[in-house]
Amino acid sequence: MDTETARSLLEAEQTRLREIVGTGLGGDFGEAEQETASDVLSYDQHSADAAQETIDRQVELSLIESAEMELGEVAHALTKLEDGTYGVCEECGQPIPDERLEARPATRFDLEHQTLDQKRAGVATSRFDADSPRD
Image (cartoon, rainbow, N blue to C red):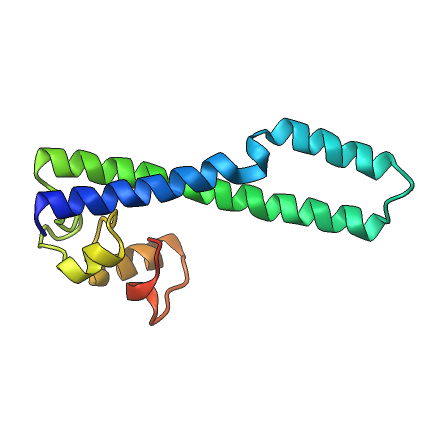
């Protein structure tokens, strides 16, 4: 994959992830938590509603944390692009196919070694890993 195409894909992914992080929880987690606490203290709200709000906030926080981790992966890929090692599997040193880089611009491994890395980390793998938007 040529450098300009790779940079374009990585920058688009970076923009997408920054939007997720920037819009999460209204940009102010502390204020949102204070509102929930005051809602819980209010007797107008059913306890199940308060529990659902807590779950929703936990899910949203998890998505934001995941996006922040992915931003780190994109930054790492941009560094590799600058030093000329982008698109090379970090495990075996072989080129990563362009199709994989298009699907997952910040990937560190070819598909074979991604699966091995996930198994070592205890992450479930599926036959859909090659098409999944995340590493």
